[in-house]
Amino acid sequence: MNSTLPLTAPGQVTLVGAGPGDPELLTLKAVRAIGAATVLLVDDLVNDAVLEHASPRARIVHVGKRGGCKSTPQSFIEKLMIQAAQEGEVVVRLKGGDPFIFGRGGEEVEHLQAAGIPVTVVNGITAGLAALSSLNVPLTHREHAHGVVFVTGHAKPGDSGTDWAALAHCAREARLTLVIYMGVSSAAAIQAGLLQGLPAATPTAIVQRASLPQQRHAGCTLDQLVETLQAERLGSPSILVVGDVVSGLAQLRQPAGARQVA
Ligand code: SAH
Image (cartoon, rainbow, N blue to C red; front, side, top):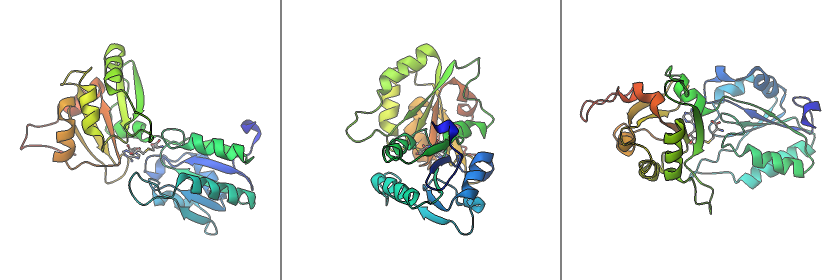
C-alpha cells in the first residue's frame, strides 16, 4: 500500500501539489520531493519559482494544458510519466494547487497504478483556500456559513455539468459558501443558474491570481457577476466565491463609474 512507499524513489511517481502560486505556500514535503526529482513534469499554473528547489541536473518538462490554449494531451502526459518511471527516473508530477482538486490527479493515479507504477501524492494548498485567505476572509464563519462547496464551472466534454439551480437551492437551505473553479468562461450560465435559487443580492467575489503579486479581486452581488468580470477585466485564473462570507468584499463595490479593484 501507499503508506509503505517512500516519498520519492527511482521508478516511482510523486504527484505534488505546488500550491496556488506563492512559492512560500509549498509544503516541506513538496520541497523535499521536488529536490529529489530527476524528471519533473510541470503544469502551466505552477509558478516557475518553485522549480528553484529542483536539482540543477533534473530534466524539467512543461506540460501545460489550459483549456483552449496550446496543450499537451492528458494521455501524452500519462505516457511520459510512465515511460520516465520505467526508465528508473525519480519522477515528480507538479500540479497547481492540490493534485486532487480538479487537477485530474485522480485520473493520473489510476493510469499509473494500472501500469504498475508506484505513486504517492503530496497535498498542496488549493486555489479556493488561498483566494479568500489572502483577503483575511474565511470560507466558513459561523455567523455566515455552515460549510463550503468546491465546484467546477468547466464540465468534461459529454457531461452536462453542474446543475447551478439545484446547487443554489442547496446552498441557500444549508448555508453553504460556493467556491467555483474554472468559472470565468461560463460565468453567464453560472450567474443565471444560481439566480434561480439564490437572491440577486447574494455577496460574490472574484479573486484572480490568488497569492501572487499580480493578485486582483472585486466584490459584487450575484446579479452583477458577469458585468463585474468585464468591467474589472478579471479573467482566468480566477476563483469565484458566492455566499455571505464575502459580504464585506461586496460592500466595497461602488456604483458604476466609481469602481474599486484592489
Ligand atoms: N488543482 C488546482 C485547480 C486546477 S483547475 C487547485 O487545487 O488549485 C484550474 C483552476 O483553478 C483555474 O481555472 C482557477 O479557477 C483556479 N486557480 C488556480 N490557481 C489560481 C490562482 N492562483 N488564483 C485564482 N484561481 C486559481
